[in-house]
Structure formats: C-alpha cells, structure tokens
Image 1 (cartoon, rainbow, N blue to C red):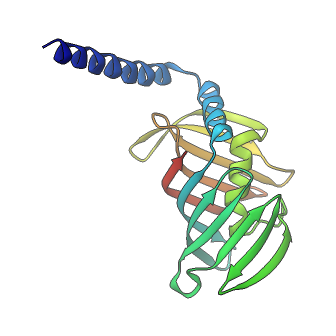
Image 2 (image 1 turned 90 degrees about the vertical axis):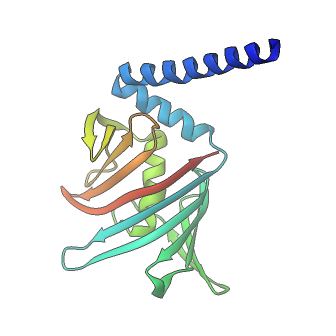
Amino acid sequence: MRKCKLAVIILVILFATVIFAACARGSAAPQELITEIREDLTAASRLIITAEVTADYGDRVYTFGIRYTGNIESGEILITSPELIAGVVAEISGGCAALVFDGARLETGALSGSGLTPIEALPLLMSEWQGGRIGFTGFEKFGDHDAVTMESLVDESVTKKTWFDRTTLLPLRAELSYNGTMIIAAEFSGFVIE
C-alpha cells in the first residue's frame, strides 16, 4: 500500500513538472525560447534530422529528401530522395563539404554564405540556430502549430527565417532568401536531440 501511494505521489509530481514547464514556455517571451533552443543545440552530442529541402532557382525547382546525423560542427547528410541520387552522402566538417558515393569522395571545398546550395542549407541553418545574429523573434501560427519564429541576416544578401514549435521547441520549417527571394526551404519531419 505504501509503495502504491509513493508511486502515485511520484506520478503527480512528474505530471505537475510537465504542466509547469509547458505553462512556463507558454508565458515566455520569444527571445527566452530562442535562448532555450540555442542551449539545447549547444549541449547536444548528436542530432538526427529528417527534412524535405526545396531549392527554387527561378526557372527550375528541385526537391530533396535528406537525413542528417551528427552534431552542430560536423556530420553526414544522406540524400534519401529523389531515387536517382538516393544514397549520396555529403560529409560536413569544419565549414567544408565532401560528397561520397559508392566509395568515391569528391571534395567540394569551403561552404560559402552567398553561393547557397541545397547541401549547404542545413549546416548553415544549424549554425544560425546556435549562434547567428538574431534580427527578429516573435510568435506566429504555423499550420496547426503555435510557433516561435527567429529571423536573421546571414550576410548582406542572405536572410533566414525558422518556425519552431512553441511547445517542443523543434523546427517546423526554415527558409533561406537571397536578396528578398526565397531560394531554399526545409520542412522538418523528424528532429532528435541527444
């Protein structure tokens, strides 16, 4: 009987803790939530991210399925779709990328801020989420989600906006724009922080 009461008390305390955390996030200012997101990413030893990335070059649009495994500094981006290039891996480390497929490795050099490619989008976004200069934060509705937004100027021509779920603080969508025109968008379907 005593064990049962103790178990009930522990469950009530856990439930109250979860409710309190949700309420605290609900009343927090956008900047406070962005700070919490940054702390979570900085402390992460491993990230597993699944996303659909769309690159709009004006005259043509490409969509890629990707899965990233690594941390903020380095990792691998596996192309999961389209089928024609599925299995290609981009290794990201120290601001440089290398494409790997079927045993061949192609060094692509340093990632550039202005010559954005779809492969560069996720590393750039993660870098900005962790420590980029914030231009604006706010609350918006994103589909069925209450979201906190973070906008920043990456360089003189590239801007970034991300919508994070206000409850989980995980990204829902991010957009990179070049001279005011959205060129790369990422829709996140999975995001694990370990």
